Length: 506
Image 1 (spheres, helix red, strand yellow):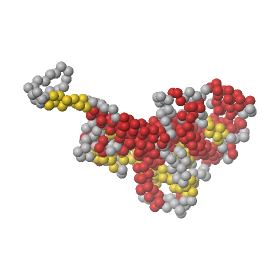
Image 2 (cartoon, rainbow, N blue to C red):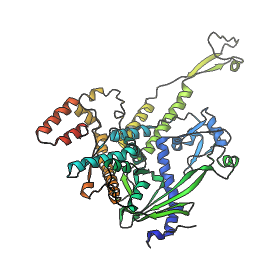
Image 3 (cartoon, rainbow, N blue to C red):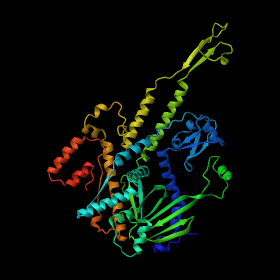
Image 4 (cartoon, helix red, strand yellow):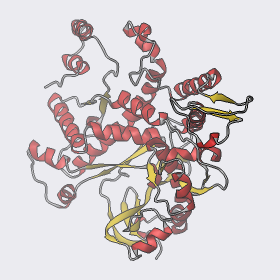
């Protein structure tokens, strides 16, 4: 079965193009973005020792492989990786012993620290409606919608996906109760009923490997069709036997659940869902817009994707892991003293231990000691310079994560702290702009859905919303109160002053 696109009534949308997106382009997209995610999460896969690769892994006594080993040379891991198969697609290299493998995931803590810096505290949604009572209700509705979708966890998940992949898409899916309101006769609702219906709106974050947007040929910022392609696991076992599945998986534990290839195509007027390229559902959309919001992590001109935080760090992460592994191998060889016995018969059979004596008639006999740890300043300097390079590339320094070391003297004032975190603050401001614009569009879509379904009426001007981010830096509360008092004396509205202090205005 092929793609039947008649519902979209668009001659420019060709089934052959959708076939190419799903069958060919999606493979490249998934390979690229899956690598970024695996470098971030650095998952561990255990070996069962049944294949040559598993036996090579077991040589070091650690019966597992980590994703970031993908960037280590074969002289350390004893494995040769394939770009087509990803981090866990490797083969054993003959006559190369697996050495000490050390993985320090600097990418993960830098990404998480940046997310905490951006969405570590709750943000506020402030309606621009001229009607004060309506402004308060709109704020309550938006707060209820985001609370139903995870509250601050939703924003942190959004920031993690954006930071790793360079962008994140949010699909606004109204609940069945809202869709039923469109076809039913208009009925007046209480505000409590409005909140209950608003909470049925699902804000689904789409991960990059499944996103295949069809962009306007003349404007890369306009999405004409939003295509998703992914494998969905069913609550059923596949027809293939578990024994055969294990053989095909190289002896590793495999998931025997049935997997269906799902393709979803959405436009401003309709949607379709295919399973294994068989049409299983379609329908029209009454909203008049494509319910997808695209958010770039950091703006990148002329590209749909934004700038990923971790992609520039991959070569530096590989170099850091390589040098740490080399150092671990050196320590393994040098940290234990070794002895060379000359002219002593059977020396190789006599262990070196306290109180043991050797006897020989050979006057030339001797025991020489060698090994032991030796200072290697160039190695330590090189590793430190790699970490500094990652600080510059990411903008996230150890100070952001609370690692102060010898820098306490630099943090004696708020100004000094801001100067120390200048790179992180500048990058955070750039992210605030892109994420604020995305959240504004989500809010406008939510309010427009409620208006179209005759649940809560608003006009275009009333759907404008301001996003207020609290300061990520620790602040002196007394200084903030004094500043707020001065602002109030200058005529700043009380609602804005309270909002800046973090209080909800009633």
